[in-house]
Image (tube, rainbow over all chains, first blue to last red; front, top):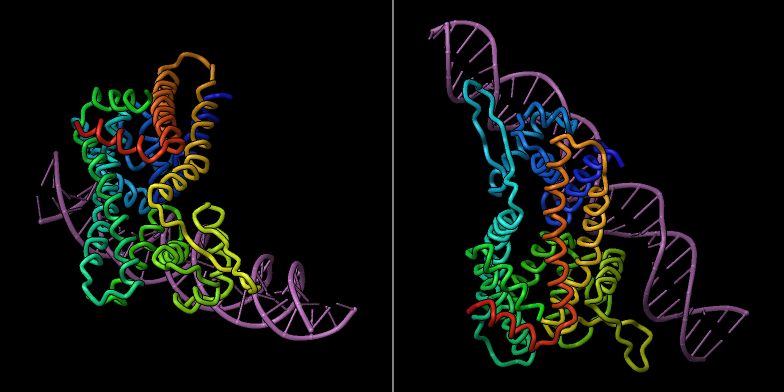
Length: 167
Length: 167
DNA sequence: TCTAACTTTCAAAAATTATTGAAAGTTTAA
DNA sequence: TTAAACTTTCAATAATTTTTGAAAGTTAGA
């Protein structure tokens, strides 16, 4: 396999993975492109490389910045904005965890808590509903705690936990 | 809040969460409904409760069965099929992990391995590409290993790991 | 076998989501 | 200021995904 092929394969795969994670394809592809590019890239360069429109490029770059995984770079003496993605994968994972926690886990925990508070009758159906949503809530809280720990942790902690898990 | 409201809120939230996880809304909602229902439900009952068509109900029930998180139940003396979702949340998490590993992590690991094997020149661009994809590959393998351990583990192991993480 | 009960399929329609490109907006430097 | 360089917006369009419902398929028992 030669470089161009590998590159396009990787960009493609990263886009597909994105889709499975509620991030759209273009966003995943832009991220992939920035990951493998040592230099920061301009909107133009991204449009060119991925063959997408200006509007599309702009929106998805903003999206990546919102996720906190792409940064603006200003080059001295240039008006154009350039963009880079951090190359530290553990840091990337941490940032994605942080965002998913905020965007998905928190709202679900909120609903699970709310529906716990129904205080009507003692029909069996209701007891069961409470039991299930309580279990979900408990589990979610455990996961949330673990994620929080991961997000705040340093590199060392992460590998230590992996070690502990494995033995 | 009264029961009907809580129920619909929960079903709604589970559907939304589903969307963020590459599972569609109806599929999430059906799963929610089965989770909180003690009795197994028929296609008819699901259609009725969620106000969806027969085709939609059928397809998404099949989807849930494919995910391994919903099971068919035959009631003695009845021709109709009924469906239930397991009520053990840890087991649910394990099954979802198993499937996501197979559907998402494995394909990505495969691509990352493949693109590693490019052996062209020693241009800086290529070196960098290899470095990034190697890091991604290493990280992915770690996560994959942890998931594998989780999937094979028993309840006890899981809580032990959480304990170890927290301290 | 035949029929009624039930499940599956699938083409068409609807809904949702992504993409385009041109116009509007903003900023910088002369 | 003004104009050029650049970024953002957004209505229109395209692409994709979901949903429908009716027809086809299957199965069990009379």
